[in-house]
Length: 373
Image (cartoon, rainbow, N blue to C red; front, side, top):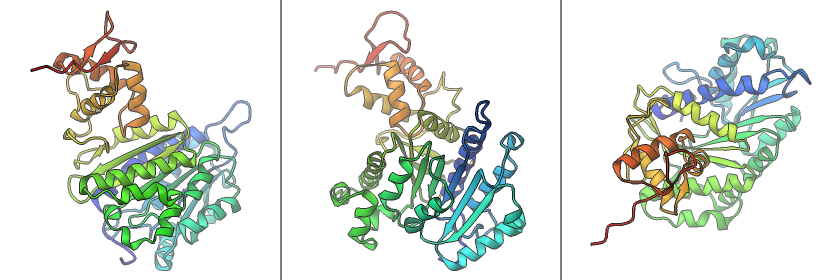
């Protein structure tokens, strides 16, 4: 691959997701506190596979659009940006891409030393250099968002994720390219051991021979790795564009609010190009596409029905319990969708209400008894 490459449709959709998420992330973390003046003394964004800063047809890379949207955020006047408090770290391994990234940033924003936030561009390896750079910049003890966005092989040791997971109010996003799940021979077993935390954790996924289950097995294995690393909540999802190959993302956070913010970002991503976020548990239903979060009274996405059915196959539950399961275990669904799904599924006869009275979040629901022949 040369210095620049074409922007794939799935990557463009992923960038829109990042933009929406960061639009919410920055003001939350940079808001002022009546007691201390700042909610957090320092906030750090780490983009560990930064790339050259531009795509073949001129589209901005993540370092450029991340910095641009921060500096021009609608709430920037209330965020009190300063170089000691806000750090953006971009790491790029390839020398030519590193040089290109530097030139793109300076062309877009002028001398980096003159910016109201500290921008560190380093030539280095994501796996080896992320922790030392974060230590050098005094990032520990305050929020870090680590973006590990490699199109090719994910080779960042789980030790890096564990250190970030143990850090206050910190999160990670890891991206797997479309061919990662079928080209394991390019990675040696020692690297896989480091990425997943031990051979016993990844060999079951390697043994999965069914093509359509293989990516699910590997994605679930990595999600479990982030759980072992210390992230209380993990999302896994497949980003399916109208054209081109899909991407696979895993998000780790310690906060339920972080889960909600990421899902709200998904719902806000424009689907004019036909992309959708697909839950790995979705095996039997087509994805109807993004339905407006507040316009689901008459139409229920078939993926949501399938997922609620999967949850109820393990036994009856309250609608509230199903809502929490949707939040913590599914890619894009929110607690508010549980009651709407239950109402529609009851009308369709695919769900029964076991408690009396009006259907509410406290109602116990289950699957209909199988029809005996």
